[in-house]
Image 1 (cartoon, rainbow, N blue to C red):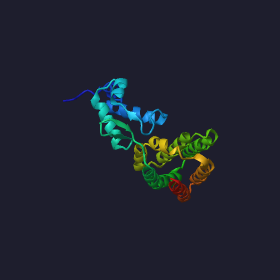
Image 2 (cartoon, helix red, strand yellow; image 1 turned 135 degrees about the vertical axis):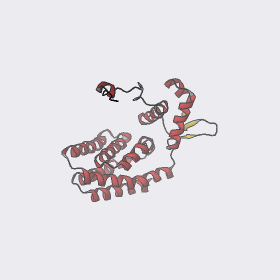
Image 3 (cartoon, rainbow, N blue to C red; image 1 turned 180 degrees about the vertical axis):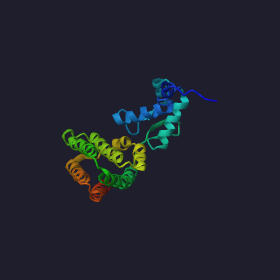
Image 4 (cartoon, rainbow, N blue to C red; image 1 turned 45 degrees about the vertical axis):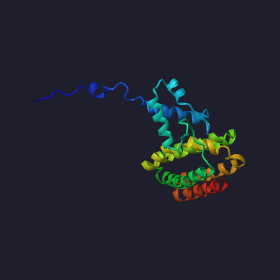
Length: 226
């Protein structure tokens, strides 16, 4: 039997009015991560589930599930009395993070350098690099690290490597940076800015091998300082 075609406006309409809205669990996750980024939640800070329930207008189940998601991703930890807090990373945790990111970040800058082919690609990279150098004026450590994270995000998007993009989305740099900002750049501002200046020059020159080598050398120095 012949069927009439579905009108285009009906094809575009989503029968679920809340299809684009984050789930209740995701709202909890986003709130906690956002407050870590803003500095409102500090490492070691206790998080009261009842407060999140009241603020978000949610029941206990999605709040507890959201907390468990963040526990699984290393951002929060559960205590013996069933309370929760923002996880405080140990010196070993910080070194382990840098050790892994030396490898992943090194590959990321190499691929970004090799796959940046268009003028728009170069402009995005240049903008990210300028963001890093601008922090040398404000001398705000957290701003520096988030500018570096933006560079990695930009390079990963240009390279199109889905695995690196996935790692970045789950790395929760803000949580890590809230720990390391107490130590770096510290007295090493010029060394950090100089290192990223050289990495950036190699990336813009399309020399991926040099960019990776310079980046990994700098991260090894950071790990030694930790």
